[in-house]
Image (cartoon, rainbow, N blue to C red; front, side, top):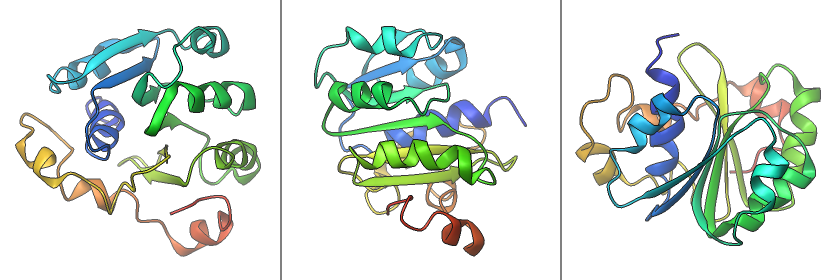
Length: 184
Protein backbone atom coordinates (compact mmCIF):
# COMPACT_ATOMS: atom_id res chain seq x y z
CA UNK A 1 0.00 0.00 0.00
CA UNK A 2 1.17 3.49 -0.67
CA UNK A 3 2.47 5.05 2.55
CA UNK A 4 0.18 8.08 2.32
CA UNK A 5 -3.14 6.17 2.26
CA UNK A 6 -3.17 4.96 5.86
CA UNK A 7 -2.35 8.30 7.55
CA UNK A 8 -4.73 10.24 5.32
CA UNK A 9 -7.60 7.82 5.98
CA UNK A 10 -6.91 7.54 9.73
CA UNK A 11 -6.77 11.31 10.19
CA UNK A 12 -9.12 12.88 7.68
CA UNK A 13 -12.06 10.49 8.00
CA UNK A 14 -12.23 11.14 11.73
CA UNK A 15 -11.43 14.86 11.57
CA UNK A 16 -13.97 15.48 8.80
CA UNK A 17 -16.68 13.52 10.61
CA UNK A 18 -16.52 15.37 13.95
CA UNK A 19 -18.27 18.75 13.86
CA UNK A 20 -15.52 20.70 15.64
CA UNK A 21 -12.46 18.60 16.56
CA UNK A 22 -10.37 20.91 18.74
CA UNK A 23 -8.73 18.29 20.95
CA UNK A 24 -7.17 15.13 19.57
CA UNK A 25 -5.48 12.29 21.46
CA UNK A 26 -3.13 10.27 19.26
CA UNK A 27 -1.94 6.91 20.56
CA UNK A 28 0.86 5.81 18.26
CA UNK A 29 4.46 4.72 18.26
CA UNK A 30 4.81 5.91 14.62
CA UNK A 31 3.53 9.46 14.94
CA UNK A 32 5.33 11.29 12.15
CA UNK A 33 3.04 10.47 9.21
CA UNK A 34 -0.09 10.97 11.31
CA UNK A 35 1.19 14.23 12.81
CA UNK A 36 1.95 15.55 9.30
CA UNK A 37 -1.71 15.07 8.39
CA UNK A 38 -2.97 16.44 11.72
CA UNK A 39 -0.90 19.60 11.20
CA UNK A 40 -3.47 20.66 8.57
CA UNK A 41 -6.00 21.26 11.37
CA UNK A 42 -4.73 24.49 12.89
CA UNK A 43 -7.70 24.74 15.30
CA UNK A 44 -6.86 21.37 16.89
CA UNK A 45 -4.53 20.62 19.76
CA UNK A 46 -2.92 17.19 19.57
CA UNK A 47 -1.72 15.23 22.57
CA UNK A 48 0.33 12.12 21.86
CA UNK A 49 0.86 8.98 23.92
CA UNK A 50 2.57 5.70 23.16
CA UNK A 51 0.56 2.70 22.06
CA UNK A 52 2.72 0.02 23.68
CA UNK A 53 0.83 0.17 27.00
CA UNK A 54 -2.57 1.62 26.19
CA UNK A 55 -4.00 1.07 29.66
CA UNK A 56 -1.19 3.07 31.25
CA UNK A 57 -1.36 5.72 28.53
CA UNK A 58 -5.10 6.23 28.98
CA UNK A 59 -5.39 5.74 32.74
CA UNK A 60 -4.16 9.23 33.59
CA UNK A 61 -5.89 11.08 30.76
CA UNK A 62 -8.42 13.66 31.86
CA UNK A 63 -12.11 12.76 31.64
CA UNK A 64 -14.00 14.23 28.65
CA UNK A 65 -10.85 15.88 27.32
CA UNK A 66 -10.76 14.68 23.70
CA UNK A 67 -13.03 15.17 20.71
CA UNK A 68 -11.19 12.54 18.68
CA UNK A 69 -8.95 9.65 19.68
CA UNK A 70 -6.79 8.03 17.00
CA UNK A 71 -5.55 4.63 18.06
CA UNK A 72 -2.74 3.40 15.83
CA UNK A 73 -2.96 -0.05 17.42
CA UNK A 74 -5.37 -2.92 17.94
CA UNK A 75 -7.11 -3.65 21.21
CA UNK A 76 -10.24 -5.43 22.35
CA UNK A 77 -9.42 -4.86 26.04
CA UNK A 78 -12.70 -3.75 27.59
CA UNK A 79 -10.86 -1.71 30.25
CA UNK A 80 -8.96 0.24 27.57
CA UNK A 81 -12.22 0.80 25.69
CA UNK A 82 -13.89 2.05 28.89
CA UNK A 83 -11.03 4.54 29.30
CA UNK A 84 -11.44 5.65 25.68
CA UNK A 85 -15.12 6.35 26.36
CA UNK A 86 -14.25 8.20 29.58
CA UNK A 87 -11.65 10.39 27.83
CA UNK A 88 -13.93 11.29 24.92
CA UNK A 89 -16.36 14.16 25.13
CA UNK A 90 -20.09 13.42 24.81
CA UNK A 91 -19.91 13.80 21.02
CA UNK A 92 -16.46 12.22 20.63
CA UNK A 93 -15.27 9.53 18.29
CA UNK A 94 -12.42 7.07 18.05
CA UNK A 95 -10.77 5.54 15.01
CA UNK A 96 -8.57 2.48 15.42
CA UNK A 97 -6.89 -0.42 13.75
CA UNK A 98 -8.66 -3.74 14.04
CA UNK A 99 -8.38 -7.29 12.71
CA UNK A 100 -9.39 -8.10 9.15
CA UNK A 101 -13.15 -8.15 8.62
CA UNK A 102 -12.70 -11.75 7.51
CA UNK A 103 -11.82 -12.57 11.13
CA UNK A 104 -15.26 -12.33 12.73
CA UNK A 105 -14.12 -14.12 15.91
CA UNK A 106 -11.43 -11.47 16.56
CA UNK A 107 -13.71 -8.52 15.78
CA UNK A 108 -16.71 -9.72 17.78
CA UNK A 109 -15.30 -9.00 21.29
CA UNK A 110 -13.97 -5.62 20.13
CA UNK A 111 -17.24 -4.51 18.58
CA UNK A 112 -19.27 -5.85 21.51
CA UNK A 113 -17.11 -3.86 23.95
CA UNK A 114 -17.44 -0.73 21.80
CA UNK A 115 -21.20 -1.28 21.68
CA UNK A 116 -21.37 -0.55 25.41
CA UNK A 117 -20.29 3.06 24.79
CA UNK A 118 -20.89 4.08 21.17
CA UNK A 119 -24.04 4.61 19.09
CA UNK A 120 -22.19 4.19 15.80
CA UNK A 121 -19.59 1.51 15.02
CA UNK A 122 -18.53 1.30 11.39
CA UNK A 123 -15.54 -0.28 9.66
CA UNK A 124 -14.13 1.41 6.57
CA UNK A 125 -11.83 0.15 3.85
CA UNK A 126 -8.45 1.29 2.68
CA UNK A 127 -7.32 0.68 -0.89
CA UNK A 128 -5.41 -2.51 0.02
CA UNK A 129 -8.55 -4.10 1.52
CA UNK A 130 -7.50 -3.55 5.13
CA UNK A 131 -9.92 -1.66 7.34
CA UNK A 132 -10.07 0.84 10.15
CA UNK A 133 -12.91 1.07 12.65
CA UNK A 134 -14.68 4.32 13.51
CA UNK A 135 -16.85 4.42 16.65
CA UNK A 136 -18.79 7.54 17.49
CA UNK A 137 -20.97 8.75 20.32
CA UNK A 138 -22.78 11.25 18.08
CA UNK A 139 -21.62 11.78 14.49
CA UNK A 140 -22.26 9.43 11.58
CA UNK A 141 -19.26 9.24 9.23
CA UNK A 142 -21.30 9.38 6.02
CA UNK A 143 -24.32 11.44 7.09
CA UNK A 144 -22.38 14.03 9.10
CA UNK A 145 -19.24 14.38 6.98
CA UNK A 146 -18.20 18.04 6.85
CA UNK A 147 -17.94 18.42 3.08
CA UNK A 148 -16.68 21.99 3.26
CA UNK A 149 -13.77 20.83 5.42
CA UNK A 150 -12.98 17.95 3.04
CA UNK A 151 -13.02 20.32 0.05
CA UNK A 152 -10.85 23.00 1.68
CA UNK A 153 -8.04 20.65 2.67
CA UNK A 154 -5.27 20.66 0.12
CA UNK A 155 -2.27 18.50 -0.63
CA UNK A 156 -3.82 15.05 -0.31
CA UNK A 157 -2.62 12.22 -2.42
CA UNK A 158 -5.56 9.90 -1.70
CA UNK A 159 -8.31 11.29 0.54
CA UNK A 160 -11.11 13.46 -0.87
CA UNK A 161 -14.83 14.12 -0.38
CA UNK A 162 -15.76 11.16 -2.62
CA UNK A 163 -13.39 8.66 -1.00
CA UNK A 164 -14.74 9.47 2.49
CA UNK A 165 -18.26 8.02 2.18
CA UNK A 166 -17.31 5.35 -0.35
CA UNK A 167 -14.82 3.82 2.09
CA UNK A 168 -17.77 2.73 4.25
CA UNK A 169 -19.41 0.69 1.47
CA UNK A 170 -19.23 -3.00 2.40
CA UNK A 171 -20.16 -6.13 0.48
CA UNK A 172 -23.37 -7.83 1.56
CA UNK A 173 -21.61 -10.83 3.16
CA UNK A 174 -19.68 -8.45 5.47
CA UNK A 175 -22.88 -6.62 6.35
CA UNK A 176 -24.56 -9.93 7.15
CA UNK A 177 -21.60 -11.19 9.23
CA UNK A 178 -21.58 -8.02 11.31
CA UNK A 179 -25.34 -7.54 11.70
CA UNK A 180 -25.91 -6.49 15.30
CA UNK A 181 -22.22 -5.68 15.86
CA UNK A 182 -21.72 -2.84 13.40
CA UNK A 183 -24.04 0.05 14.07
CA UNK A 184 -24.92 2.67 11.55
